[in-house]
Image 1: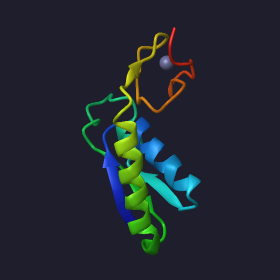
Image 2 (image 1 turned 60 degrees about the vertical axis):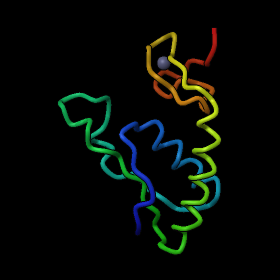
Image 3 (image 1 turned 135 degrees about the vertical axis):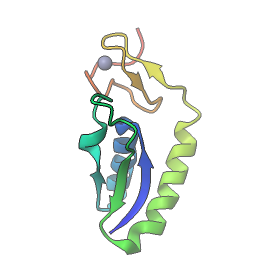
Length: 102
Ligand SMILES: [Zn+2]
């Protein structure tokens, strides 16, 4: 097991996890219970993404790099329903599933 990524935003972390799984890399999330919703003052603990197989780590990092540089070109958007900030690569709100746009 090896940590390949960490982020304080659980939505972005899960985006990274989804990308890994699309590439058949087994991975899991650590610390998510500390970072959910930013309540009880524990939200500064970053959520972590780990790969199960160390041999997958370099491939995982390459995928992450590509994915993150792609998604950076898309501005994030705020959900009109619940106000949640969503990564630009999401088409629906991760929290309430409302579609992006008007
Ligand atoms: Zn929403």
